Length: 419
Ligand code: ATP
Image (cartoon, rainbow, N blue to C red; front, side, top):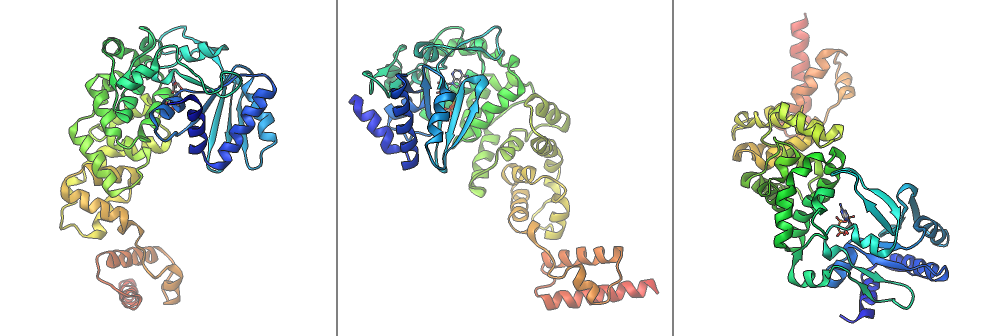
C-alpha cells in the first residue's frame, strides 16, 4: 500500500469529529516541532484494512500538555489526563483518541508492573507485545506517511504470525499469554514456533500476575465476538489453570457461550464470568472471585452459580411459572442467564422465560387498590398481592376484573378466618 494512502485511509475511517481532533493534534505537534506517530493495533489494523477500533498515538514529548492545548480549542471534546503515566485521552461523543508520551519500560521482577520513563519511539516499540503491534506510522514532519517497523512486523502480518520481540517477553509480563490467545483468535493468526515454545515454557508466570491485571485482560476478552474460542485455547495451553487451579473451560462451556448469545445479543461480562465459573462449587467460586479481584456484583453472581445449578432438577417442563419465579428470583440475574445458557433443556427454557417475561409480571392491583377494597393494612395485604401475582403468572386470572374478583375472594376469606 502506498504510504500516503495509509493516512488517507485512517482519516476516511474516522468520524468527522475525530478527524478534526486528529488534525488539530498533528498541527499542534508540527507547530512545536514534535514527532507524533500512530502506533500499536491501529497501525496493524490499518495495514490489514480492518476497521480501526482505537486511535493510539505516541509522541516524543509531553503528551498530556499537547492534549490539553488541543482540547482547549475543540468543542465537545473532553480531555482526560493520567499524569503518572504520561498519557491523555481526548473523548468526543463518538470517538476516543489516546495520546501517550513515548516510553521505556523495565521489569524489575516477573509479573510486576514495569517502571516507566520517557523515551524514544524505538523504546516505545520495543516495550510492545508482538511484532505486528510494534509498528508506527509517522503523522508529522518529513517522515509523514512512513512506517517504522524495527521487528519486521509487516512480514509477520503477511504470514499471519504472532511473534514476541524477545525470549523473556512472557516472563516479563505473562498477561501477554492472554493477549496472544486473544489476537490469535481475533486475527486468525498462529503463534510463531519459538514464541509458542517460550509461551508453553513460561505459562506458570501467570501465577504472579495480580488479580486486577487478569481481570482487565478478561474484560478485553469479553468484548471479542467469540470469547469461548480464546478460553478453549487458553485452557489447552494450561493458562487458565495457571491463573487459578479451579479455573477450567471445556467444550460444553464453549457451547453454552454460543447458546447465551442466541438468547442475549450483548451478554454482560458478569454473565460471562458466571458461565466461566459454571462448574465451580461455592467455595471454589469464592476463591476464584478473590483471585480475579471481581467486584461485589460479579462475586455475587459467580458465588450464586452453584445454587442456581442445583435448581435444574426443580425446573422441569411442568413447573408452574409462579414456582419458577419463586425459585429463581432470589438470585442475581447474571447467574440465571448462565442457567438459561448452560442448564439442561427444560431448566434453560424455564430460566429464559423467567428472564424475558415472568420476572417483570406484576398484579394490576397494588396496595392502594386493595385498601380501597377495604383490605386491612398488615401482613395479609402482602399475602394477597403475592397470591394475585402468582395467579396472573399461572394464567388463573386474565384481566383486571378477574384480579379484582380474586382479590375480593381472598380478602373475604381472610376476614372470615379472622372472625
Ligand atoms: P489493539 O492491539 O487492537 O489495540 P487492545 O484493544 O487489546 O488491542 P490495548 O490493550 O489497549 O489494545 O493495547 C494497545 C497496544 O499497546 C497493543 O497493540 C500493544 O502494542 C500494546 N500493549 C498493550 N498491552 C501490552 C502488554 N501487556 N505488553 C506489551 N504491549 C502491550
